[in-house]
Image (cartoon, rainbow, N blue to C red; front, side, top):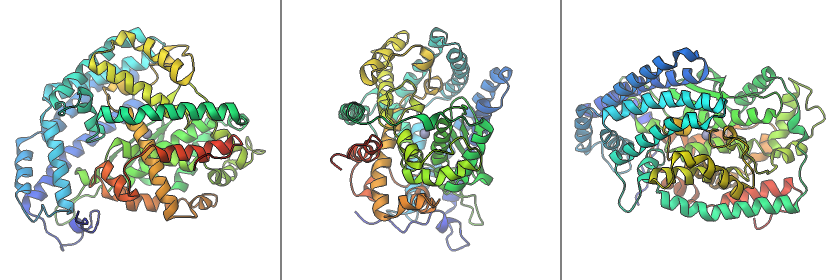
Length: 535
Ligand code: ZN
C-alpha cells in the first residue's frame, strides 16, 4: 500500500492562494456547508429541547425539528449534489490516491448514496415521531410507566425497520447491519456478537474474581457531600485543565448528559448533579469533555479566498461513534480514574470545598475503581459497564429481527440483568426506561460504546509507549501531551480513515479485546490489593 500524502488538515485547501481547486469541488463543499449550516440549526434546537425549553413548547418543537430535517434532507439528496460528486470523481486532479480531496469525495459519495435511499417522508416522520417519543419517554421514565412508552417504542422500532429496509441489508448480513452502518461504517452485528460473547465471559469472571478474592475498597470518599454549584465550578476547572476551550463551548445541566459539537466554535456539553456521589457528575463531565475535545479538534474550517472550507464535509467529521466513544472513555477512565489524576485533582477540589480534606489520592483511586454490578449504565464502573451494553445490543437486535415484542422488553431486560450482572431490577425506571436512545430511534448505537472502550484501551497502550512519563505528568496537571497526541493521530484527520484502518495505522494491529482486559487487570486489581495477573 502506498503511504498516504502528508496530512495537512485544512492547510492545502485553505491557506493563501497556493492551491486552487476545480470549480466543481468548491461548489461541492459549498453545497455541503449549506446543508451543515441548516443541520446545526436543528442541533441547536435539539440542545435547547434538552436544556432550557419550556415543556409546553414540545409539540411545536417537533414541527420545527421536522421542518429543519426536511430542509437538510433535501440538500443532502438533491440531484445537483449527485452531479457535483460525479464531476469531482471524474476529475483526476482531485482523485489522486491517498489525497485529502479523494478521501473527502469517497466519503461524500458514501453519505449521498445512504441519504438518497431514504424517502423524505420517512426522514420527516422519524424526526417528528422521535421528538414526540422523546417527550413520552421523559414522562414515562419519571412516572415509572413502561406501558405509557410502549406504543411510542413500537412506532420507533417500526420506523427504524423501514429505515433499515430502505438502506438495504448488506449481502450475508442482517437488517441490524443497515442501521449499524450509520454509526460504525462497515461493522456487522454478527462480527460484534462474536467479539462480545467471549468478552462477556471474561468480564463476568474478572468481576467475580476481584470481588471474591480482593479487599473491597471503601466508598467513603465518594459519599462526600458537595453542593451542586461547587461541583459545577470543579467541573469547569477540570475542563479548563484538560484543554476544553470554554470560549468555544458550554457546560449545562440535563437528565441525560450529552455533547453536541454542532458548529465551528460551538461545542456544548451537559452533565447532571447530585449532592452526594459527586464523582457521577465529574465523570459525566469528563466523558462528555472527551467527546467535546474531539469535536473541537476536528478541522471545521470555513472558506478562505480559495472558496473551500472543510466544515460540512466528511474531513471535518468524526470517523464513527466507536472512535468518538474511545475519546470520551479515555478522558473519563484512563485519565480520570488514575492515581496521578487524583494527586492533581484533590488540591484543586480543596479550593472549593473541605469535604475531601482528609482524603488521600490512593483512597480516591481505590474508591473510583471499585467494581460492583449495578442497575444504571451511565453510572457503571469500568469492570461491569460493557455488560450493560451487551444487554441492550441483544435486546435491540431481537426487536429488529422480530424475535422480541416491545411488551416483553421489561421482562427480558430484568432476566438478563439477573443473569449477567446478578442484580434484581426493582422498576423500569432503573431498568429498560433508563436510556434515551430508543426514543430517538437510535438503534445500532449501543454496541459502539463497547467498541469505544476497546479502541480506547488499544490506543492507550500505544500512547504510553510514545509518551513514557504521561501518567506522571497528570499529577502535575500536564494533560497537554495527551491532547496533542490525540489531535495529531486522530482528531485532525476527520473521516479520512475508517475506524479499523485508523486502529491499524496507530497501533499496528487489528482491534482486540486483550488491551481492555489488561487495562482492567492493571487498574482494578491493585485497587483491590491484588497483583495484576497476566499483564
Ligand atoms: Zn459517550
